[in-house]
Image (cartoon, rainbow, N blue to C red):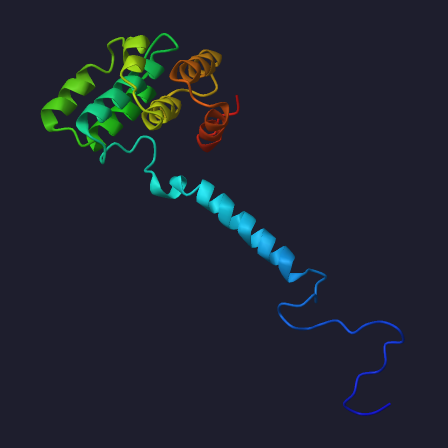
Length: 177
């Protein structure tokens, strides 16, 4: 045996130790394919990084904020009443919204009033707004109550939301329907 040389491998090929070689049994093509799949998945989901949370209303226009707050109140009342926890959630969203003080006061007073769901749905004119209405409704209700789950299914149907979007929003908010 010669010093400085590796022993013969008797019929086996020597493995390539280069970073792009097949040291781990992978080919560079496999890495390229996996990299492309990761990039594609990121680009499909980049809106999650760009969109504010569903109940962050400080950056939306006043008309949209009013609609979303009314949608939250309607969802909270779907089980027959508005409990204190739901009232506090909605009030905190109102206080953090871009509405002026007078409008905030009016909205807080009107939380307990019943809201016509059909009227709210008629005001939803874009798919983005439809998903926001569903998301804020989901954020405010007790997700374990069967009546609230039925309301959310009905709301998603009336808003015309795609099933995959509903599943994704439910998972983001911790609900499995």
